[in-house]
Length: 68
Image (cartoon, rainbow, N blue to C red; front, side, top):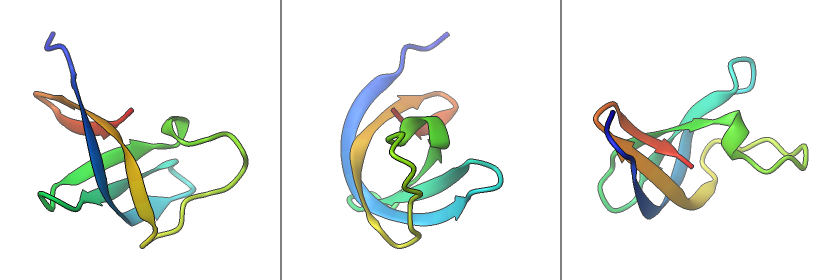
């Protein structure tokens, strides 16, 4: 199994599904879409808004990138 590489990034939330608990952020620098799961969000009860700014760290593996 490949070890993930942590990479900081900034972007915007392009898609979010409350029912399914995930969405996608478009990375500003590369325009790559990064998977975001609800478990990566703060547990303060606030849900992400599409189009909102995003700053985080992603884990890149052979299966793609996901937010940490």
